[in-house]
Amino acid sequence: MSAPTTHRPAEHHRHTHGPGCGHESVVHADHVDYLHDGHLHHEHLDENGVHYDECTKCACGNCTDSCAVCDCSDCTCPTCNHAQCQCDGCSDTCGNCTCADCSCPTCTHAA
Image: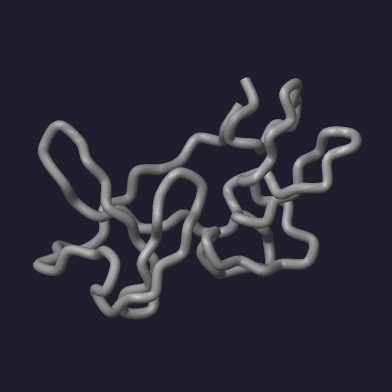
């Protein structure tokens, strides 16, 4: 089961992010976030067209970073890139876990 994410549109953009656009990119779960003016956002398509959403913020009590770049050593946030799979015998991050019988509540492929 994946954690629900909040839909948070970013400011309007005249610039389309992508390879070679001049902004640092970070793979985060099922999308790519772009560092833009001190925050991270990604392209989002809905029934109204394309816009950019802000990256989710780490839910840890002492962290103020975005989940795509959070590096808390004791992170418990389910949407951070480095959340560790909680299955017995798995040592991968939730974003990379491929356990066939995964029961981890924060892995993106768990049912």
